[in-house]
Amino acid sequence: MIKAKRKPLEEIFDLTKKYSRILCVGCGGCTSVCLAGGQRETLMLKQELSALFKQKEKKADFSVFVTERQCNPEYISDIEDMVKDHDCIISTACGAGVQMLAERYSSKPVFPALNTMFIGLDRSTGLYQERCRSCGDCQLGYTGGICPVTCCSKSLFNGPCGGTNIDGSCELSRDIPCAWNGIYERLKAQNRVENILSIHPPMDWTDKGPGTLIQAGYENRYIKK
Amino acid sequence: MKSGSNLEKVLNAGHFAVTTEFGPPKGTDLSIVKTKAEFLRGKVDAVNVTDCQTAVVRLSSIATSAILVGMGIEPVMQMTCRDRNRIAIQSDIFGASALGIRNMLAISGDHHNFGNQKNARKVYDIDSMQMLVLVKRMRDEKKMLGEETLIQGEVPMFIGAAANPFAPPMEFRALHLRKKIEAGADFIQTQSIYDVDKFREWMKIVCDMGLDRQCSILAGLTPLKSAGMAEYMAGNVPGMQIPDSLLKRMAGVPKEKAAEEGIRIFCEQVEQIREIKGIAGVHIMAVEWEHRIPEITERARLLPRPVL
Image (cartoon, rainbow over all chains, first blue to last red; front, side, top):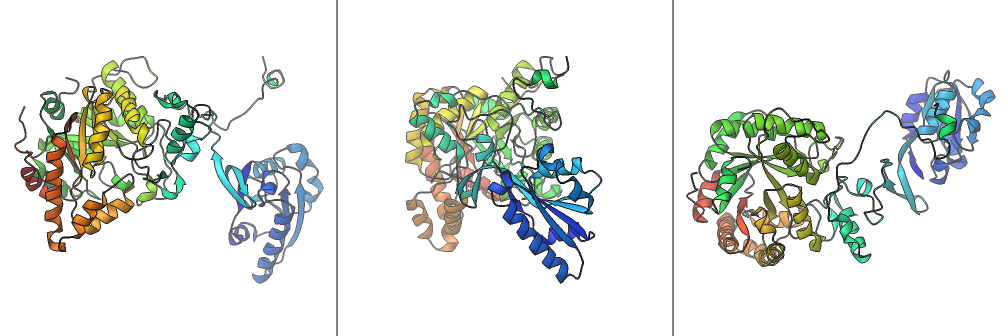
């Protein structure tokens, strides 16, 4: 899922200090799962921010509402009445959720409370690791299930580079395993090193602007003939 | 001839080739370039111009290489994948060719976290393997990446690549070298070799695969200047390995004699490496020691250089 991290409180204060009726909108999706933007975290944000407002002698009223998911228009339509009563919105969703709110309630300023970090996996409670850059052309099939785009510091498709340390770590840090060392070792164990013996051609990074995905089976609904 | 470069001629004629490394200044002071380059004139067959090594901004490798061409000293222009996408890479290769640069070395480049622009956005649109394919296509087929129409003019480039024989996954490194040759490498420069015995074993594998007959392999050598430098390189330079025996040898001489000991070790290594089957020459990476190259090459019996 998407992993996010709260911005420094001072930064959120700077974004919102002009306003006096502030609605904090949480998200029950990914940012709730990664303990950055769910019910608990949104309430905490409200408490900390209102304390900071007081400390800086600024008056503001804060409300909190947590939507099921902010990246879906249906889930954010039920806050319409609340939005009317506030002069700005702080979102604890990922960047997509913030934009959904900003688009739906375009007359109100919407501010992000989080920095969206990456698509990652849960190592443990509160510990997440990046594993996908959503490149749009999954390479994992030939790389033994280790992503070269995400896990190689240079995103090499024909790695490794010459910088692998003797302990199998990346030149960037002894704490980062060399992705290509891992790819080789895993493919070898699965007896399919031949996957990486031929040259992988340049990636198709075609950029057509913000991407749109139409899931298979839904083409008739969205593509006009 | 693929490029007509001096390096290509020297290697084709079967001479034991000698190249060295050249770091451009952090600015535009050409007097530094000229002074350093004069030390190298006639002492090596070609001079590798680094491309913002360790990701520190310096005078560009393409501009520095062009200045060397103007001085009559042959450059090998290094080009990293770190800072350019495929548009800039192809455009710069045209530019280099137009400026008379006839050798290039395609490398990934040190990650920008090492340098003085840590907040930069990395590029790595294509990797060094793909860069080799791309420049070979420009030279041999006169086509750009993904285009069938012919380019205007020639790209006579002698194409180099890097290899690190000893970094993990070690078993894959010879296969990776084979990929680079298939991609288009005419010559290879290895990471600095300190363990010559281990390198000899690796070269046996390389020769058994027939790779030494498909490209020219230059063994990378870096003379040690001090015990501190040896320790630092062993601990901090990516992919670098220095045997304990050498670290002890460097530490065992007084500080003022360390550089002399380093050169002595270097000369011994050159002698040993000359005897290894499949080695076409040496690439001397004497960091900020351009002024000592005349002495080093003389003492390692690498002079005179052939004039072809």
